[in-house]
Image (cartoon, rainbow, N blue to C red):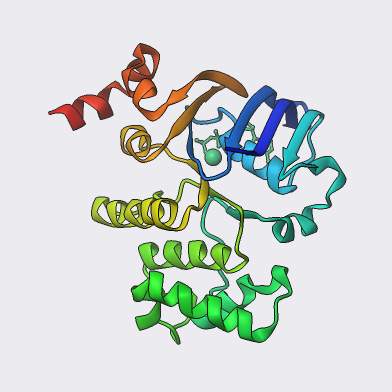
Length: 245
Ligand SMILES: Nc1ncnc2c1ncn2[C@@H]1O[C@H](COP(=O)(O)OP(=O)(O)OP(=O)(O)O)[C@@H](O)[C@H]1O
Ligand SMILES: [Mg+2]
């Protein structure tokens, strides 16, 4: 497998606050990697730094063989970096179809290609097809999250980064959402980096995972290894017990 994303010694922060402190992690082509860790560990900051919303203080970021420091933030989507940020940013006053069309913009593809991908998204997410002319601002939480993901997929990313997509969704909707992510990975080979609080579910989906603490990697391993790791069990004991029971 070839290395798609590689972060080494990444340090970043906000004014005096150091949010990333020598972070090393990688995602290989075709992998499903999950990023865990307590509140404030630096998970969101990691994604913001990779997508260019935040400039690192030091360290290296390589994506698809390129040094990201040399790629402006606005060019990163065209390079294949997809980011569904915390709080699913869709355009509330535009319809579902318009939101999808806006997602296709960074690729500068011809209209025929945009239409083809949009139809593909409506096939993957039948709920969005039913709601295609509804204003995005009136969608339910789960539908809005699907739209945010479909919109990111319109640009045909090589890596899709998702920041807590399950936040605020009812358990059944979370299961549905994770089902979509698993299918996109298994059937379409999509490479995924997922930030998730629901550790045990995420670790069952993922090939590998990292636990961040205070801006660096505290534990890493395969999904199965992390589920067995005493440090992970200590941090997420309630969840793992619940699932065992
Ligand atoms: N805009 C900001 N200004 C100042 N400090 C910030 C800002 N955003 C994040 N931080 C700080 O940076 C650190 C890492 O935050 P980050 O949002 O990356 O954590 P996280 O792992 O995503 O947490 P959560 O699980 O709560 O989403 C925290 O200490 C946080 O308070
Ligand atoms: Mg966060």
